[in-house]
Image 1 (cartoon, protein in one colour):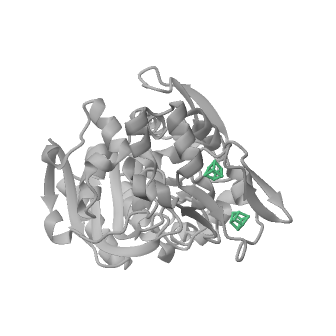
Image 2 (tube, rainbow, N blue to C red):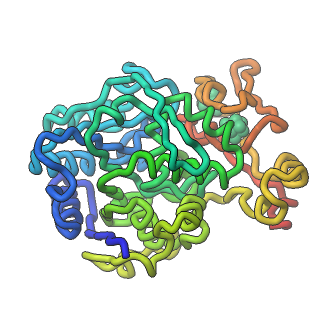
Length: 381
Ligand code: SF4
Ligand code: SF4
């Protein structure tokens, strides 16, 4: 049984968040179980893009600050880090830290922000689908990693939490290469589990005070959940987190891929501690309306010609709303197969090339990329 601790937390007041995070970590035995004096501890937050904390697309800075304070109290040196979407440069990081509120808490509490934008290739012989990976060098320089995820829906993966948060150790635009190499959701999810088994966070914390429902991970709506969760196991933490918002763990691809490896995949394998999950449960949490094509893979065998044909012709597709689009080209620059071109300053997609990864929707700062389902697809489903 894997232990997951839960503490109610109704808002992002720094005192309340610190109390909730402390309670969760105390229930797991205290921070000194995970951090020894002098350790450099990378706090892997979800800093997807330049979004304000109240937009609920990124880990709230007060949650990062609370974990950092506990790391310091245990004698460690916390370093806030992530590789957001887009270019992995010092300038881009600075902008993300500023808008996401990390710069402010770092200055207030004396927490280091990572500006090392070097990358390094490492081998991972135990990986199922990737045996080597390119990661941010800051990861290799740390003695331990604490994953601090945000509970959100996700267009491709349905849900993004503790396991998927670690995709952010892959530097900037290199993420697009991984999307291209692992086009099928099953392979992509296996790759996410591989990254997680490589990173091996000593502790995972979930910011579920306010999560994101609907068109996550960036274009959805903030939804108050009112909890902080923590676990030594990122797999168990995801199982408990999705259960809290009424999503069945069986529907989450990363949890299913973890199950095949004998990792925690159901609530019956979780030892819950602290506040009641049942009491905090949300019954009407909205998932993405287009919810991905996994069922076509199930029926027709993943990359079979018929599955590709159905997906291309009738599957959910990105639609670019030109009213409101500011022509920033973020979608074009981050499209893994380069299926987007700019015509008169606005994006146009070649659906024959599109692999339905929805990175364009994820990274559009204007929320002007929508995912539409064909009526035939809906009926078939
Ligand atoms: S659709 Fe969004 S990401 Fe693409 S150019 Fe327009 S505003 Fe930028
Ligand atoms: S157009 Fe959007 S969904 Fe299609 S491959 Fe490019 S980024 Fe992915």
